[in-house]
Picture 1 (tube, rainbow, N blue to C red):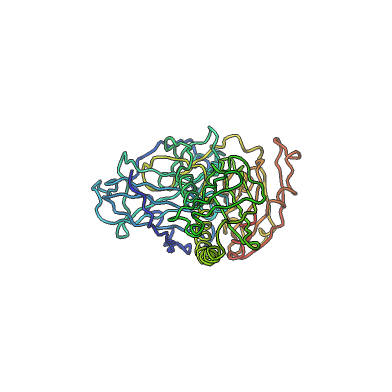
Picture 2: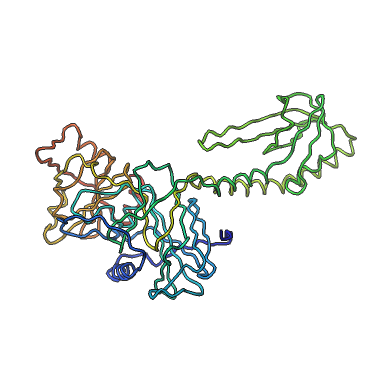
Length: 465
């Protein structure tokens, strides 16, 4: 295994800021020439009047992060979500199959919700004329280049991705790859695993923050702090305390407490508070607390000196606690589960469930904005966002009588010719369309009055859907 690089700096890959003709041409040239290992495509006779391909609907897209990699050494990169990328040594080749030497650039992004899938423009449907679509449990895009020229992954590379997973996918989820950025195909197997990097990091923080082991003998005890890790408590080393009152219980002396605080509350009288968190993978963490009143057995001069020394060291340690808490919160934000799969090439991978029977009936939809343009001239795309299915379906103007109804929370978005957004939010959709009133034999016609917004404002609205 390659050594983990703790010094990786994530940088926003900022060139994707606008959608233009040159951008779309770049995507096509970049992806269509990608010589990834071919995977089998499921095809049938097509009756669509257009081809699904990557077309971001708005100017705002999901940003890439970029890394620099030594092609000969390989490397590993960790993402704040918990996703982990491992590129094997000597696994990068050019379009002639020759090994690449020197530095290459990797760009990466991931998609875990309907909003990001919508913004990416990545198709979730098939170009096979059927109603099939994919329900995503996480999707990634990984590309590589050297001197602005695309490079590729060698066949049978040991490179892999651990993709953050918010839940364990059911057995009917599979790994898919978007061939030539147009057609989804089976990409092999994946395994759902525990995020051991997250567990290890949390345990490391707990050990670094652990302060003392409490010893009790007939209501007398000593504090034994770790001088290197918790210097602010070392002033009490060698001091015997007498417990005056508190909820100390038998066996507490064997606990490695996470937090111990000593607070002066009176003349030779101190409040000692201890706590420990027992973590569990089912989010049912338990916290144990102990509080007691105690007094140190020492001379007045010794007590004054120790109080002054303790005040200084405690201030320094408070800063350490703040930093360690920030780091702990960062690590807790990582996914507890990962979906691991081997890379067969650079491009777009998706952990998906193929939905064949999910569409209950089809709807014919009309909208208030249609009076403002001619459908046969301005081919407005309609985006159906299935929030509970983590999927986005796209339809051209001629296909607005083929809109599927599923049992998912649904919103509809249209990008109008003048650049504004017309949308139907999930609440408005559910109020208008009731499943129990839909017919499987006659056409289901519905008209919507949409809400309007500028592209910039709609990005904020989208977050609330």
